[in-house]
Length: 286
Image (cartoon, rainbow, N blue to C red):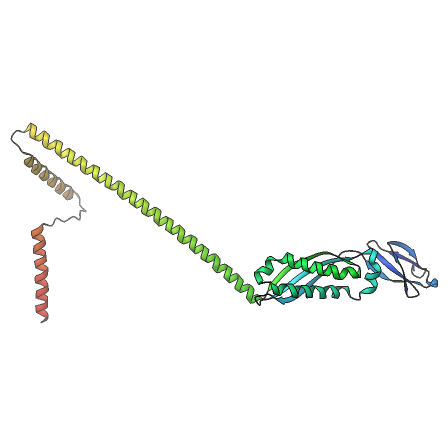
């Protein structure tokens, strides 16, 4: 109804283009405007000044021949003071931006290896932004922000990268485990050595105490019993210890100790018995 009466309304954050008999007239700012159709004025269209976003997916390959899909997010907007260029110079803005993004990404990423491409996402985004800024400023557009939001390698490549990472972590874990086991063994050996050292000290002190006790006993017995020698006293002590040992063995119902006569002669007899047994076995086989 308003257009029929020659009145139009321009919304906030947008402008309208008025033409007179097909020729550009002026830019209409937000608000209500009168366009008398009888004088040849007409509304050519509206132009939004809001920030718009375009997501571009570009497939390319890296320097080490890995195919990746780079996802770029372009945020742009039309400039009000260049609304004429924006409205009349470009037929399809989004396709134009996409073409420039493809060109820059396919020129930048092939110079980088896969790991470097992940590390230099900001540099790639900056190169895309600079190229778009130079190109789109002629058409009245401002590039607000350019982001490389994702770099997606081929599925097989991602699986291989995960396996390499897992193997590397397992190797580190194995090294740490081996180092921990090494430390435990060293500590165990140190503890065992210290234990044996202290055991040796205890045995040495025990023997020293036994020697001191025997010496005191021999001296005391020799003094109190005239006519006895040190050898007599030692023989008596050994016999006493022998009977004490036999009594302790006999007192235990679960004793498994066996006394076997042993000496150089006994060893010689055992060797002779073994030799005679071998000779008898060889004779029987013949």
